[in-house]
Image (cartoon, rainbow, N blue to C red):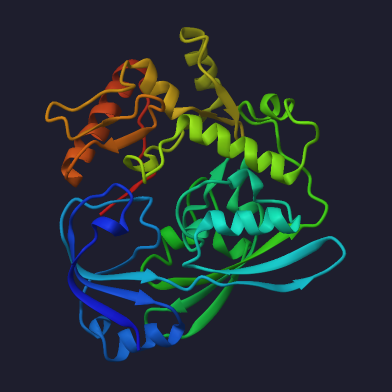
Length: 340
């Protein structure tokens, strides 16, 4: 039987360190656990429910008067392989970077550019996490689900997940209908390295060779120099999505702001750097008037809890950043963080 706690603080379960309470906190390990929640536990009532993995992409504004399901399953399994690929099944509760470290150590390529991203495996298909020119969808083979309706299981192929930029079917049609139990990744035995994004190539030139481990080391170094670890100061990583605009609009903006970085997207669109836009508004290192929340002094894309901030304090800083960017660039920033 799964562990169920009542009226429990979620402060240690979310990387922004917001001290709110959950009516029920349930630690999920197997589909049997979910079946118990449905038939005998709190899910057999008409009650709100959310899934909380690593808690690195959620902002709680108030206490949650419902059921929080926290996956704690964390195994890795080699399912099959052929001459070119291996298929690795990882449980939803596994820390994402442990999977990346495992793959790199075994010589399996495809997710090395996603090194040092906080959070758990279960969030990778939901959010379609991405960094340095790579997204989770590039390697996800299948996603294994459990139904909140009756505890039955099902598997979706990559195509059926309807992946997009930081989105998927799990954020829309399947939201709160299915729990991600595990994910199978298709990783390459002879990987093609992706090194063109940002200053990855420049940093790799300092290495003797380009290897999976060297790419991982470089990316961890770059991220560490710019992004604060939640263990050092509470944050949820990139708070906003990078805006995607039609190329013609972006080029018009670039005439006004020649230093503005632009990255290729798809379908005649390009991606702008949300952090750069915020920084140009003079908000890097900004602190709210009460001193509890602000914008990180090294990466303007990160909103930080400077000490006992409430969810409303964090949200106020995000709204201020959105307002300033809109005033200067006429661009609406969309949160990447899920606001609850």
